[in-house]
Image (cartoon, rainbow, N blue to C red; front, side, top):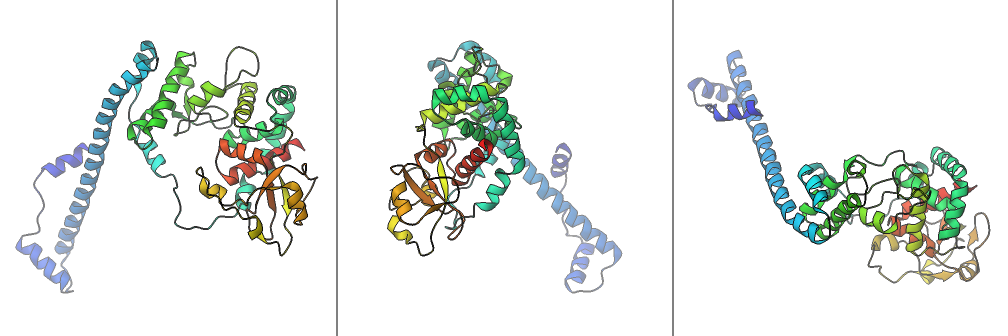
Amino acid sequence: MRLLAARLDGPAYRPNSAGDAACKRRVDGRFAARPRCGKRIAMWTRAKALISAALLMATAGSAVAQDEAGFQDYLSGFRMRAAAAGITVATLDAALPTLTFNPRVVQLDRAQPGNPANPGFSPFAPYRAAHVDAARIGRGQRVYRAQRERLRAIERDSGVPEEIAVAIWGHETDYGGYTGNFDLLRSLATLAYEGRRRALFEGELIAALRMIDRGVPRDRLKGSWAGATGNPQFLPSAYLRLGRDGDGDGRVDIWTSDADTLASIANYLREAGWRAGQPWGVAVSVPAGYDRGQAANRLVSPRCPRVFQRHSGWRTMAEWRAAGLVPESGSWPSDGVLATLIEPDGVGRTAYLLTGNYRVILDYNCSNFYALSVGLLADAVAR
C-alpha cells in the first residue's frame, strides 16, 4: 500500500510525446506497430491499472478508518448506557477497549436474503437430504442413548420430547461440532454501531456484558457473526432468560455441558408454548382431486409472512381425515388436534399436517425447511 501511494505521488505518465501519438495513430489505423510502440502502450496500460487499483485500495482503507473512528465514538456513548443498565465498571473497563469494528460482520449481515423477487418456492427434498442424512441421524442416536436418563428428566420437567431437544441441537451446531469462532462482543458491537437494527443488537451487547458480570469467562463468548453462541446458538438475552443447569453443578454451561445444552433447549421450547403429548406433525398423502381452495389460508401473518404463506388454514385432524388425507405411517393424532397442511415439494408429493408445536419450532428458527427437518430428524433419532 505504501509503495502504491508513493507511485501515485510521483509524476503522472501522460501519452503526449510525438512518438506516443504516432503509436496511437498506427494502432487506431490498424497499421503494424513498431516494437517500441507496443512496449510504450503496454507500460501506459499497466500504469493506468496500477493507479486504479491504488485508488480503490485507498478509498476502501479510508472507509474502514472512518468506520473505526465512528465505531469508537459509538462505544463511548454506549458505555454510559451500559453503565445505566447495571453493567459493572470493571467489566466495561476490561471489555470495551478490546473491541474494534469488524467490516466482515457488516458484509455478512447485508448479504442476508430479503424478500426474493421470484415469488416461487424451492422444493424441500434437497434440503432434507442434506440435513436429515444418515450421519446426522447416527450422531443424534448416540447422543440420545448417552443422555437418556437426563433426557427423561428434562421431558418430565418441560413436556418437550427428548428427541426434539436432540434434533434442535443437531441442526444448530451438529451436536456441538461447530459453534462459531466470531468474537461475540465485537460482532454485537459492530452490528449495533452499523445501526439497521441497533435496538436489537445493543440490547444483546448489554446482555453479553451481563453474562461476564455473572461469571461467564470473556473468552467463552465465541459464536456466529450474528451473536448466537454455544451448542444451542442462543443470543445472550436468551441465555440469561432461558439457560438451565441440567447437571446440577450450579452453572449454566451451554458450551461444554450436554446436559445444560439439552435442558436449555427444552426450556426455550416450553416457554415458547410447547404442548406436551402433541406431535409436531404427521406426514400424509393428499388424495388426487383434493380441492385446496376449501382450506386456503386467507390470513397474513405479521411474522415471517412467506413462511406461513405456504400453510393452509387450520382444520381438526378429524376434518383432514374426512377430506381423504391418509397418514404415510403411524396413526392419526387425536381428532380434536388442530393442524395446517403444507406441501413443501408440490402437489402429488409427501405433505405434512402441522400442529401448534410446529409453530413452536418455528419460534426457534422461522423457516419451514428448518422446522420440518427438526421434526423429521427427531422422529428418526427416536426410532
